[in-house]
Amino acid sequence: MNAPVTAALRAEIAPTGALRVALNRANFLLVTHATSGGDAAGIAADLGREMAAALGLPLQVVAYDSPGALADDAARGAWDLGFIGADPARAAAIAFSEPYVEIEATYLVPAGSSLRTLAEVDRPGVRIAVARATAYDHALQRTLQAATIVHADGLDGSFHLFAEQQLDALAGLRVRLEQDQARLPGSRLLDGCCAAIQQAAAVPRGRPAAAAWVAGFIAAAKAGRVAALIAAHGVRGLRVPPA
Image (cartoon, rainbow, N blue to C red; front, side, top):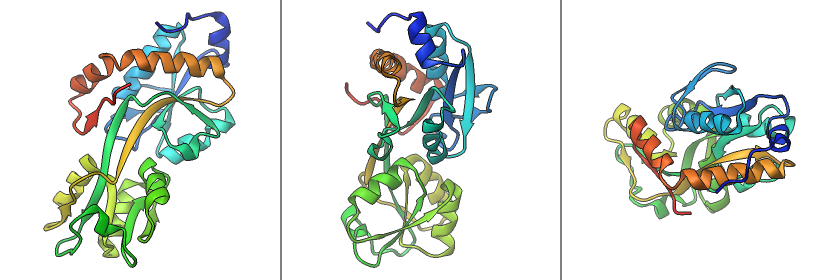
């Protein structure tokens, strides 16, 4: 059972009087539509709407075009509840719930590539196109030892960088890379997972009661509501991780 909603909790979690929910439009698996101050659709949008209703607060959508921009605004007080990858690099400014979904990331390699396994990608001289400030970008920066990351802005930017500069691999969410594969005849997706992206609900640091309430809400939602939303939106490539 989650903590009761009190006036003090509402004041901490939503100091402006409305629950400002930050959504990352680049994550098409979780956000299918979002306009700042307006409406929104998708799994993350639905969870935010349900949290606002549980708190008895009006909802205000704050839409971002990248996870990096969303994370950067946490310390500026621009939003109250965010949906973003639970990245340790962001933990100084953001308090995360446990992950409510997990998304697999892997590599796309061009036609004729000699790369066959994930381990072969992490070699000297291998250049990997990566969308800047994504959760898998941060994960690869922590784990890769020999390969070189080449950054681009946004998912489309990383695809064009990979294709036009003939890089050795493109990192991304498997579901998105399946779409990119269709645009490059002969390209291949590597088996396995180079990073498991854990998506969480979050609040800015310094709001302990809000963080505890959000964590409790997400824990309860994982008992069945998140799976129901995945099914309702017909999204592939997501799994609900165990508590």
